[in-house]
Length: 263
Image (tube, rainbow, N blue to C red):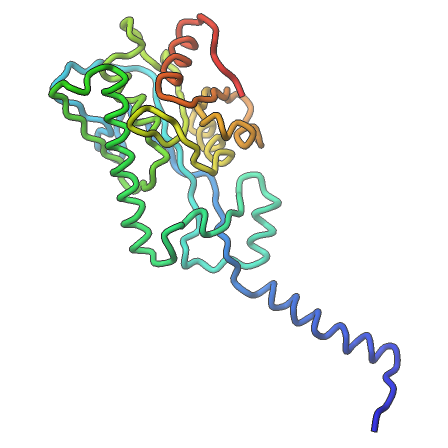
């Protein structure tokens, strides 16, 4: 036998599944990571008491200024991220919500991710060294470069490593510093041939750079529009596609000769 529901009863019956779905969405873990500006490190100096770049087999210059690699800090792959966390991240300029797979492409196992990031860092350091020595036509010399940067993984410091090696060995090519005494920050992967690649998380990295005193930020050209999002006041963007282009831009900026690209 069937009975007819009143309108309020019918609305209550229909609303119940919706409420259940909303409750599930609010309290269920979501496949996202929440990121914020991370640490920066001057590759021309020391990090945690250890010289970042050590060169043997060639004269090394005394440098002024800084070349700061930049990072983001993201929630670990085993951290529960709920809908309120995601909404909060969307509303704040110092946070970013990113698909977990884009932050941790190697899976959810923390130890495996750490190993993966260390491998990427080592490969990036090797590529950065070869790119810098190739740029200076020193690839056939008996020069040994050691790069040390504790607690940082991934390939995004490649460009800054290369620039640091170039500055220590050659500066601007005329006895001056590649930085011109400035605090220069940046990000970007680098290949052995000097090609600079995109990295992600650039708006957060520009915030970290400005927080730590940078006035110039080198950004992969493909990420110019991202870098302009929430760009901190007083930070000048310079787009780059190659190591040679980055060196030329810094020399032009240092000498005031013009021709410095902009986003």
